[in-house]
Length: 112
Length: 140
Image (tube, rainbow over all chains, first blue to last red; front, side, top):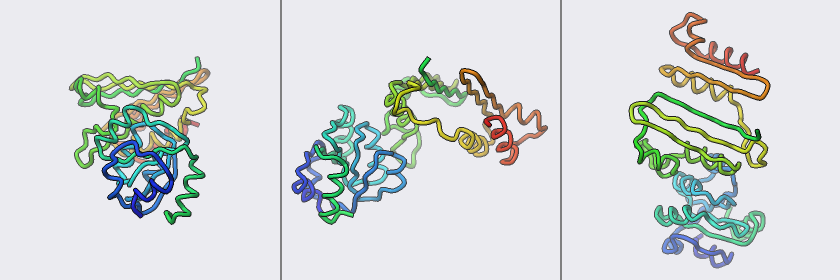
């Protein structure tokens, strides 16, 4: 599924690298706030759902070729994180919903 | 004192000033096979999450000193984890490096030195069995 379809259906805000949203293909999803767990279990092309906002999430996303990072519970990325995400070409999304609700909706949409 | 302090000193190649400034950036690394380096970046994040910070001092050709502080009682302070197994892996995986480990609690302290272990056991190199036995006995 294309990322822009997910963005539209969930009504999430795109914070960085907007130009990529139309082309990125989401192959699956993973939800975790433990970086080592994401490094171990997320796969290339996955949408990653997390509450972490530190710039370290970008390095993990890059390492795993994550499709996009979705921040939950209205959490705002740190200024440093926004700047680096743009520079590294990583899509950062923001939602007011909780991880539980987001993952439920994504799963219903067919992201698994 | 509600604080946990972790300090690491080495007498390695060191870093210049610019590298010291950027060392905790997750997109800065001295390795060449990938452009992401998370060691100090994760340590800095862990310290900041627990109301602490890291400081790095380094001199080219002299070595590096890293200090991380954590509010001990902070609910998000990560547990120290399995220090014994970490030490065993470090020592066995880097036979050419001598390690000295020192941990001080309010009522107790532990010191482990690979140099002293080698002297006491009369060996030039420590194998896994030597290392695991010594480290586990001291950290019990």
